[in-house]
Amino acid sequence: MTKPRIVFMGTPDFAVPALRALLQRGEQVVAVVTQPDRRQGRGRKLSPPPVKELALAAGIPVLQPEKIKGVLVDLLRPLRPDLIIVAAYGRILPPDVLELPPRGCINIHGSLLPKLRGAAPIQRAILNGDTETGITTMLMAAGLDTGDILLSAALPISADDTSGTLFTAMADLGAGLLTDTLDALEAGTLTPRPQDDSLATLAPPLLKEEAVIDWQLTAAAVSCLIRGLDPWPLAYTRLGDKRLRLFRPWVIKGQSAPPGTIIAADKSGLLVACGSDALLIKEVQADGGKRMPVASFIQGRSLPVGERLGV
Image (tube, rainbow, N blue to C red; front, side, top):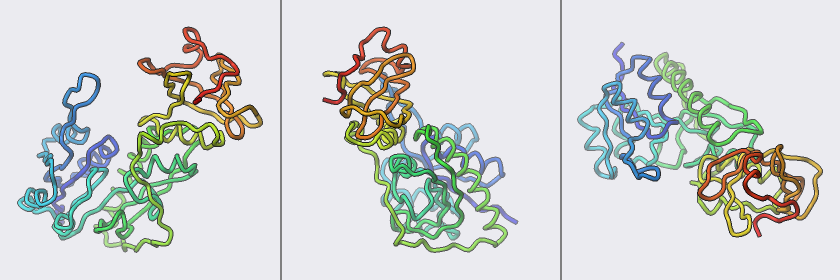
């Protein structure tokens, strides 16, 4: 049986395991589409997307259009793709691209659809306090993650998961689910099923404004905020006139003080009162400084007990 001609579309680390899985299967990947190289870091060095690096190492042609509307379809048509596979490409595909491959477009989405449709499903799952998320493979349609579901797989969210750790686990899960999806499609055993729109929730992009910690919230909610915004945009509070980013939170039940009050600061961490309960912070980062354990931070700076953060 002739392998389908596949165009793979993806950009960040999340998409790399899926592309690698296709290559390991010996699929006929005729091109990779990814976002343009971007300047990153303090040196503003031009850096290629992770997917581009893997594609070039495998000898696969790479396309990086700045604009896709009215452009991408003309780039893809000569490649005669039978199937397009998308994993965190980062842009909405226009209808002419969705209609191009005869076998359709398959997306690897980072939630259990129809929950958390949108750009930031992994982060929003943590921010929402969910205890479970997962991956869905779906046939792409013109709406926002509204296409028919092919397969799904659940993944628990632990109390110390961050968006960063969850991204890694979800990327591997997505690669495995893509393999299962392609196997089932080839065997003719997979029937797409429509989503129940009445159960749909949204996962809009993260905003920097969300990173400010409100200590009036419960300790559990602040923990979700800190973990959900790690590694970007990173939750922070104010210590005097300085910004302090917080990491590795743990909820401590039963502690009570005005919200934002520093209850303790020692080698075990920074204990801060919340609207209910308290939060033990294990690592912090001051403006212009490095992320470090609280035990190291307090050797050179003061975190006075009784002072209130965020005021």
